[in-house]
Length: 133
Image 1: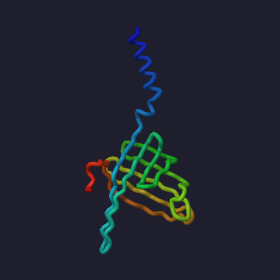
Image 2: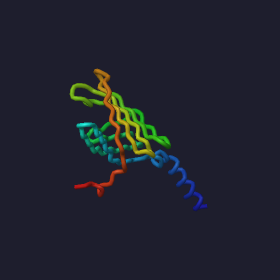
Image 3: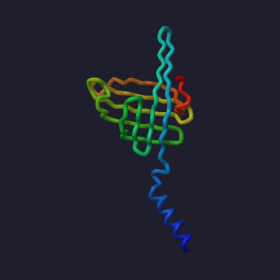
Image 4: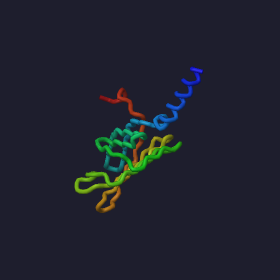
């Protein structure tokens, strides 16, 4: 009888804490490579995604997403009214990370003019030991 009580209470604890079972925290290194005729631009950005808290960190920009969805093929987020996203105004941002391709599409929108800036990056899991220096 004692054994069944332990199993029963363990099951209740797992069910009550099931949100944490499906939570995901992901640290990724994303690289943008644009090779035009005369322009060479390489950017490394470390991105942290936490599905439990909906916190997204893109380089030095940290915010809580209004929507954060994880599907079998994509991770998507959307955040509105991010304070001081631009020097003179707030803005909106959204992102879609392909879980198989590793491609990340970031969209930043300036609140006052609704002008969109899009970045397409290639991402891998971030490991501190992989850094060059």
